[in-house]
Length: 394
Image 1 (cartoon, rainbow, N blue to C red):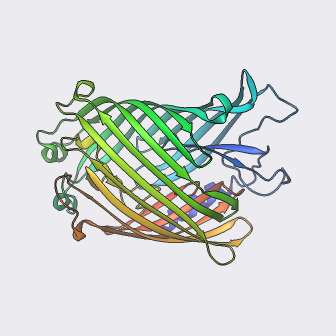
Image 2: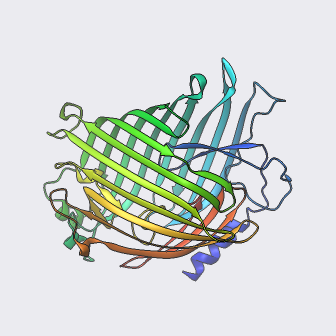
Image 3: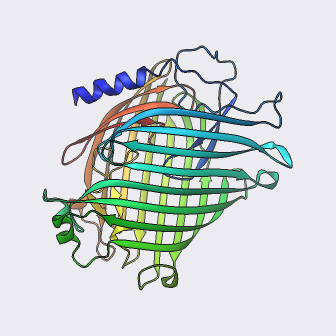
């Protein structure tokens, strides 16, 4: 662990001499196609000490019809992928008939020595009068994983199998911003998932369960947000996201119609000077006969950070986390969090024994009000996880 921390600090702070420019940035989260535009302090000195991980050049009035392209790289780490390198290319361009609208196209490539890779193309296009937009993504990934079991009792043991998870995904979302804070969306997607290179223990755990899944689905989405980023570690407001997904049996590889419902609430409350209390409550439910490949899982770089992501899986999920962030000096912020979550079978109720504890500490180096380098050390029931990445977990 000491070696990992030392290596992380060396890799990260060796890049801190990089600087950013431009009055705006587009942030596109790695695990979703949610796009956000954040203001950047236009008075900042381009020679200031600090790394802007998402260094997107912005079109100004001097270049009203140009195309801006940027390319950056960053190290990262988690227990699932090991040490990895991420390359991020971003292009910002104006709409042909309305130069006030900024669209973006992003290419993301991640690879590690463990055999993990992820390649994604993501885009954002604003339509008429800023009340309509389209988000889209195409992605392929491969990740070696451990499989402990398909129920809580098996997942609590130590006898696991090995396999490689491969995912191919294409999706698009049309959003209508009905008011300043509320938007409605309609999404379509197609995914193909496969478990390959299964060892004998993984085959034993799966039994007759299929190792492939493909299907298309339709989604209805509702977003409500009063969330505002005011300054480094100074935020306030609430974010509410609801989603319902339907995959008819004629459009998927199972013999059943599948559906899924998801909900999440984030609340940001400023406390004393430089302090922020952030909360994240989430839940999800999948119908019976949902393939195990598409189950929810406990553990990620955003939630339940103390766990290996495929240790506990299931068709239903409930969880919450509370994080206290304290600004110490300039862009330096320290954080501590605690949380819990449980996965369980759709036909059974969640038992208290299924809820896993999660807690940890972390540090962030902000380069502006919305961009940060992040190092987290999380602890769970079976061990710990060390995360190096960028942007806050929620």
